[in-house]
Length: 367
Ligand SMILES: NC(=O)c1ccc[n+]([C@@H]2O[C@H](COP(=O)([O-])OP(=O)(O)OC[C@H]3O[C@@H](n4cnc5c(N)ncnc54)[C@H](O)[C@@H]3O)[C@@H](O)[C@H]2O)c1
Ligand SMILES: [Zn+2]
Ligand SMILES: [Zn+2]
Image 1 (cartoon, protein in one colour):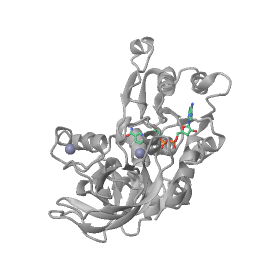
Image 2 (spheres, helix red, strand yellow; image 1 turned 90 degrees about the horizontal axis):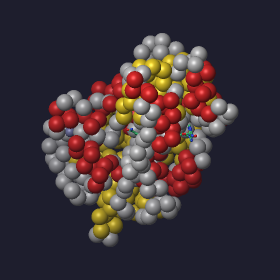
Image 3 (cartoon, helix red, strand yellow; image 1 turned 180 degrees about the vertical axis):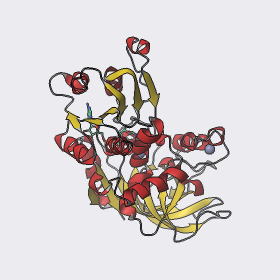
Image 4 (cartoon, protein in one colour; image 1 turned 120 degrees about the vertical axis):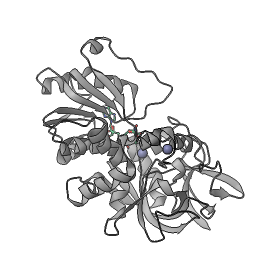
């Protein structure tokens, strides 16, 4: 069959809307019609060469849609099922899956590294030449073929154009707060970077009962949004004193229990360490250029500070995605407020430019 998609043909160049051939699902695979896709900073990072990606590649990994057809041996899904696409194929067989860490599934590393299906081929092509798709998802295409384990079923009453955010940013952020850090009730939290991921961390910290949540972002509208989603204080990192001094001042000079980085930069990662109180924890969620090195003061080690990375919110997708969708349905988790606008696929380059300027929280493509 044919499908329309936004393809990256070269780094730092606008995506192009083109038509592609899409093969039918093979064993263990599913044909999905995406109804919506969010745009995550990781797509932006691939486009700008911060994260590796082979071209031509159909980006997008924050989607939701409806199952159209299933390949041989698919038992957990059937045509008509409403689903959220997830970053890990949760193979259930690799060492990490067997250790109950499907968010580190080694098949996910393979898929993200190659942008091909697990059998090493692609389902998309153009003029007989293979076209890659990010995370073996490619949610910037109206139709795609994905692994059965990359989909989590949701109820038919759930608005897919909202819960698509749970596919990446929300699970990453809420999961970082409630799983990776397991923020304690009554604690203090700082979040550096209040885009889709950072705002989700703020919501996870609020849901877990944090007493003080400090949102750090240079964009005033992001700080306002952060306040409406659960932050108790905000900091403009470029205001006098800089982010560390300002966060410390808000915590009686002591620093926070948890500092999250949700931006993907060396300087902001190092800032988390500086704003921690003794025995505090830095949780690094942003995807910094993997060739970079981070420098931390040795002093913090004596103070028993800890630093931990967070991958996909340390989530168990089959457990956490339905849980986060339930939180949305019960009003605890706010998604509508995080969506700045719904756009057509054709408007995707404008949405990327806005992301580069720090404007808006999430743009959602509605097919
Ligand atoms: N660890 C994971 O599993 C995982 C998953 C998804 C995304 N990510 C990463 O998370 C990061 C955030 O993604 P996003 O989609 O929320 O990005 P985003 O572009 O929507 O948000 C980034 C925010 O940072 C703010 N910012 C810019 N400069 C700043 C500064 N100096 N100090 C504080 N804030 C500043 C911007 O105004 C913006 O609000 C990215 O690096 C992305 O690749 C990681
Ligand atoms: Zn993402
Ligand atoms: Zn696995």
